[in-house]
Structure formats: structure tokens, C-alpha cells
Length: 97
Image (cartoon, rainbow, N blue to C red; front, side, top):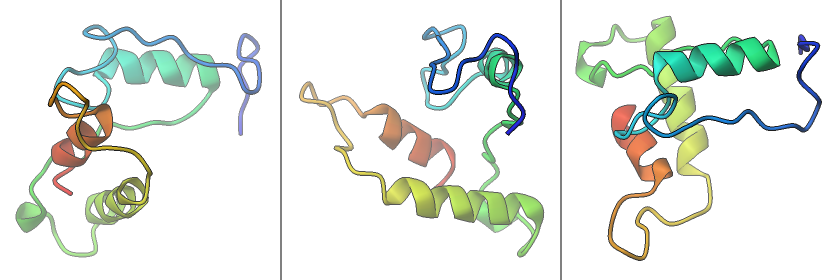
């Protein structure tokens, strides 16, 4: 992993709701840019295209399938105690999982 000088291994990137986190799930473009700048990563926007419109075997289809497989295995509830969906549920919905 490429490491940025200001990023310490194991550190966290502070992302604010609204500006960096999308209320509908995932990160905004500003959030992705901030994360990539601070960590030296190469995050990309979510694949929000419906699976039926993706060409089978394309890079986007493979990314989507991989993300869905990983996220579905993450432990945790899909709803908060107040009945609202968790960030996990919102991300799965955004990626059409």
C-alpha cells in the first residue's frame, strides 16, 4: 500500500455526514477524494448501475459482484433500534445487492 506522509498506519480518516458520507449510503465524491488523499488508496465510486444493464463479465459487474459478496458476509444488523437502516444496509441497497 502506498502510504501518504500524513497518514499513520491504523489511523482513521475523519469523514463527515453530508459532506463526505452520502445519506443514501456510501461516500460522496468529496469523501472518496479525501480518503484517497489521506491514505494513498484508490477508492472508486460505487457501481450503481442496475445489474441488468451491466455487461456480464465487465469490470464494473465484477466489482459489484465482489463488493456484494464481501458486504453480505459482514456481521451486524440491517436496521438500527429506531427502525432506520444501518450504513451497511444503505450501502448494499446502493450497490443493488
